[in-house]
Amino acid sequence: MNVINKFNEKEVIGFFRQLGIYSKEKNGYVYPHSETAASVCDALCMEIKRLGIEIFLECNIESIYKKEDFLIDCYDNNENRRVNTKSVILAAGSNALPVSGSDGSGYKIALDMGCSVKRPLPALVQLKSDNKFCRIMAGVRSTGTVKIYIDDEEISRDTGEIQYTDYGISGIPVFQVSRFAVRGVFEKKKVTAAIDMISDIEYDDIASDIEMRIKREPQKTIEQFFAGIVNKKLVSAAAKSINADINMPVGEAGKGMCFLIVKQLKNFIFNITGYKGFENAQVCQGGIELSQINPDTMESLNTKGLYFAGEIVDVDGKCGGYNLQWAFSSGHLAGLMSSRSKNIERR
Image (cartoon, rainbow, N blue to C red; front, side, top):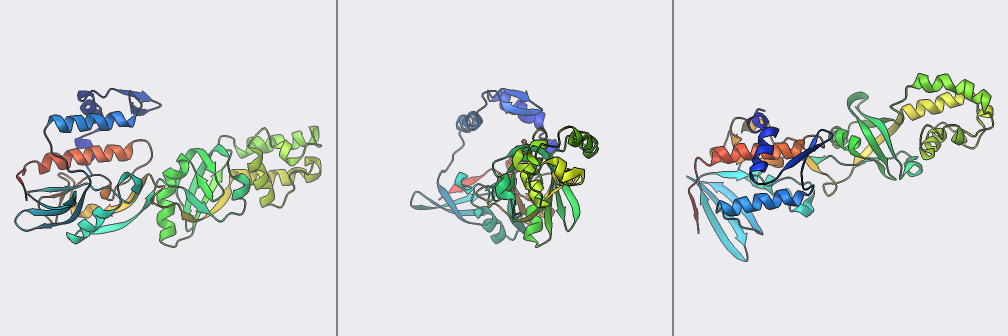
């Protein structure tokens, strides 16, 4: 879609600069100079007030239907209200993070208006596993690479700080690949995560040292032997997965067993059985199908005057501001195009 190019990241930064929000860059990411999200929200609210835009808070939309114009029925402060308008932007968010007020009710409105909705599922979310060694590794944060396989085919990978929990795996790299795993589990496919717990060290580099080190320090236990490479909890899980005793001296265990432990550390398999729910998800995958939207206007191809913006659309991105950029770009385009018809009546 050309939506982001119509209001790109530089234009977003410039827009907020006009509102008094200065930005700064850190490791390739752009943040408000205040380092508080509330300042962005406050700036937008003040601009809305300056422009004289009327907002109805705590207003539940009950239905939207179209005759000649759109009729919006809502319930506001114990009072039924009807809004008559030439155009509507449906930007009701998704199921993700319902405590923010985004409860997925916009999907029902869209369905009632004849839109097709791809099943919403959590994205940027933690993954669950039935691996019996999860409890051993719980609490560890360690840099590594996670690969997601669907029916034994690699679909996605990412590197960074992985968090090991008693229920499975978490952390930014896991979030980045989670959309594929979640959809695979939902579709009842075989989903596995292979984690390289020492992705910054090649297998051959470690293997070449093992025989020499065993000869020099045969009295060291397996746990002690690998202590300088990776967290001992991960060593314990890798050793137990091949039925090795971490308290066994490496001189007794031999190089063959040490090689097997390294292979486990380089390719530790988690069978993915589930995922955390919408209350934990940062975003949602699924939503209004893109085939029903004009990418040049964000207008529905089926209902003239109906526009979409933000996460209610079947668009989701990685961590790092991509989803915010989509919200800004799609919202800007939908607002620009829908403003061509701006007659509103209320009863």
